[in-house]
Image 1 (tube, rainbow, N blue to C red):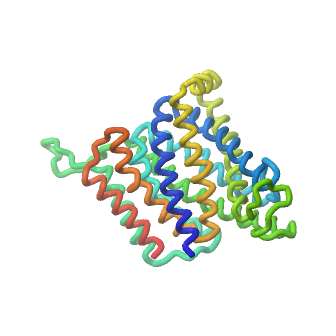
Image 2: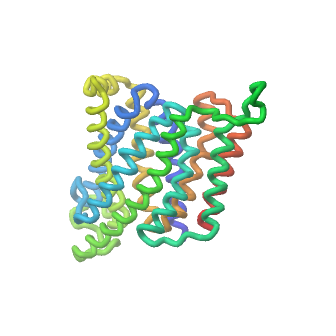
Image 3: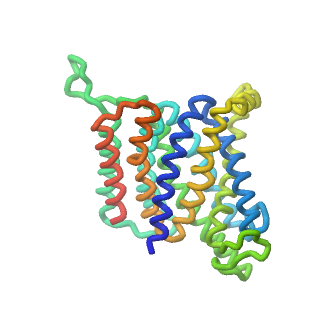
Length: 327
């Protein structure tokens, strides 16, 4: 009982850790070198995991529809979403950046309704308004100028806000696309005459496919992520290889990248996909959305950030709005 919800809470804690690691590394080496490093590390970790649990270091049993939907999820969730998220961390920090990830819940609900017919309750519109209100409360401040004392202004760079908002939207959409891909993956397993409880004969660690398949799905997404990030690096940077070499020599960045990978693309994303198998995408996203609240204290302690009561209240309101979405 509540297995999917428990997994979702672990994901929220994992994403809190990965956000903190990623903020440090992205500010040192840039978003694209960090994302490329994270994808390489995650692929190595995932290959080892699949070798132990499936008997092969690549996704077994996945058919063409499963690959198609999971690769599409990789484009949306990793290539676009993670790039925007890391850029947001650089410009506005991980604490506020994670606040915008609450947008993933209404996005998941809307796309879940469109793509797989998941039910969306009437309170969804109220939940969206409350979520947006919480975000607005955190990023808007009163203009204290003499001639504009009754106006409000953005307390953060607009560019950073745009990147973070796009990241939240892409995460919600990517989660639903992943769920569609996982459904096709389960169908392909059934076509091979196996059940989710089956254990591959070649597996070194005897775990049922229901546990190993989400890691296989994450590997497919990571393959697309690495491909997309590398192409972006080659197109955007004039010294793409040089930047990657310099990043690899930055020991602190590499340690932070490893921490971000362990808690992000490896543990966090894989468990997030597993969670959607045991609960709806919307409920999973509701619990994932606790990250903006969980990150407040560690971000303040680690980065010596001044946290205002307005920002704390805004984060709590946003999470409350996400909860309304799925009551």
